[in-house]
Image 1 (cartoon, one colour):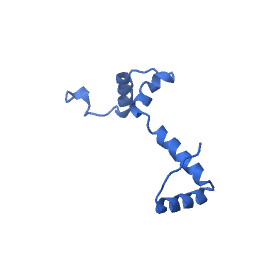
Image 2 (cartoon, helix red, strand yellow; image 1 turned 135 degrees about the vertical axis):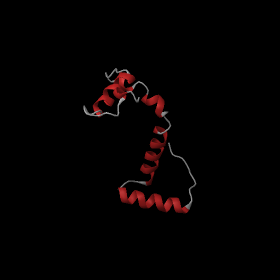
Image 3 (spheres, one colour; image 1 turned 60 degrees about the horizontal axis):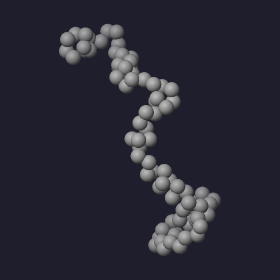
Image 4 (tube, helix red, strand yellow; image 1 turned 120 degrees about the horizontal axis):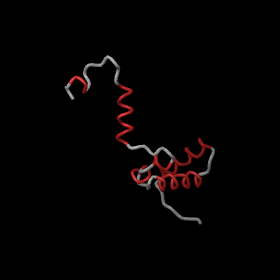
Length: 86
């Protein structure tokens, strides 16, 4: 479908320069911009919620955090919870 859009001259000059640099048409850049804009409408929290479970990495967050934190602790550390200063 064709549309008519009024753009400032500066934007048209920029669009033409960008299209020439990328080897694309003005219309192609506008289509790509609209597609990118629409993709950005997704709620990032909703998109990422449950991601690990969806891909077979069903891990309880608290357990995962404990595992990772245990990797940070060196055997000779004396500033951890073991010395009573938790």
